[in-house]
Amino acid sequence: MELSSKWNRRSFLGTLGAIVGAVIAPTRLFAGKKVAATVAAGSAKLSGLGETGNPYEELGVPTVINAEGTMTVLGGSLPRPEIEIVMAQAGKHFVSIAELEVAAGKRIVEMLKLPDGYSAIVTSGAAAAIQSGLAGILTGNNETFIKQLPDLTDLKSEVIIQKSHRNPFDHQLRATGIKLVVIETRDELQAAINDRTAMMHFSYFANNVGQIKDEEWLKIAQENKIPTLIDAAADTPPVSNLSKHAQMGYDLITFSGGKAIRGPQCAGMLLGKKDMVANALLNNSPHEDTLGRSQKVGKEEILGMVKALELYLNEDHDALWKEWQGRLETISGQVTKIPGVSTEYFVPDIANHVPHMEIKWESKISLTPQEASELLRKGNPSISMSPGEGKPGLEMNSFMLQPGEDKIIAQQLVKLFREHSA
Image (cartoon, rainbow, N blue to C red):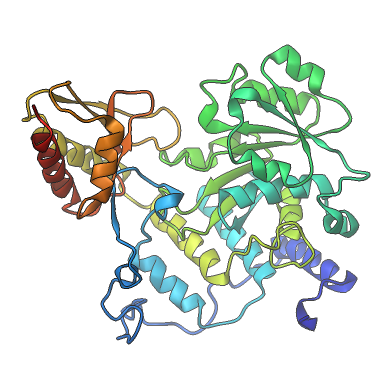
């Protein structure tokens, strides 16, 4: 065991002191020698892996044209070159991760103009933020409780969630040892609240399908003095969502960093009340003997996340929206020349709130949406496009496409439809 990282009473209190003290004493987030911005990450000549410029193909893994969006299974999004530079700079130094988290959080709060009393940390994705956020609510800053999770002896043990808000990421809630109390109506919610209730969880992407909406959920929680966590992982754009939930008064808010913000794929953010965020960090890496120790986020990812947010907030989002819509129109203009093929544009209300397009065809084209999706994925180049969820066609968005890929998609779709036309 590395003695310097062993978590004893002194190191625990030292970290706790750093978290509290950094709120008062400013930390030099970007201290260190300057590295010329012209030296981009990956510019050095390599031998072995990476010498061709495409290490994926060297390993026999084909790259994919991504028409599905910021899917973790496809690698999320592509970071901007400036982020690669900052991450390369970060890799040249050692630093206290706990102090860096506090300093990065301070910068995030400033950029987002969060209310007084709010803080932030960078996590290894939104799922990690969910788990560590709840862990901090359960344990507070009690070292014994932090070490014993998921054993909830002497701790509150229930989290209330709407049935329509359940999804694969409530596994992160259950990993803390809690029991999910599933409700549907306001009366059921009121009946479920008791002295074992640790938190009320809300999935923002399901706001339109649950009987209890975000404002009422928060109001009931506040009336009963119960902490709230809202999962907003994929809820940018719009940019306003980054501060919306904190302005409403939610105690903890989670965001993915590797989606529309285009930060490191293994990064996310936990925003919230200062004490709760501080306790979440105590339950997380770099600390040993914690539930979140496996959810390591490195110094490079922390700085990359801060830089990504800085760039994202300064983008021309109206221009980007027009660009994304224009790509869809390019594809639509070609595929609708095939008899029986039609397209329709739509924008999801919440989560991946960007221009989408549904591509439909008549029976004269002998393909099911699933078959079309599989053939596109197996093609060269490989194109990832999903069968429409509950819709009779293919579904795509264009905000993760690279320049020129809209034309490639149009060509491949036209070829596919022609080959299977009666």
